[in-house]
Length: 61
Image (cartoon, rainbow, N blue to C red; front, top):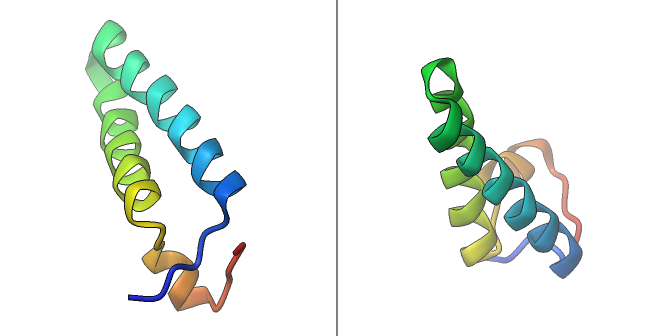
């Protein structure tokens, strides 16, 4: 699997993931959707590959 994310993109996703997960845990309710997005952001940042970028033909790194 070819990496398609730059370091800055991965860092932004990690920060957003932490914010989303915090909101999901502290607010509950419909914020669970942000929790799911946060988990996806963490996974894609860890592996450096975003499937959506691949589909759209986009890459930051």
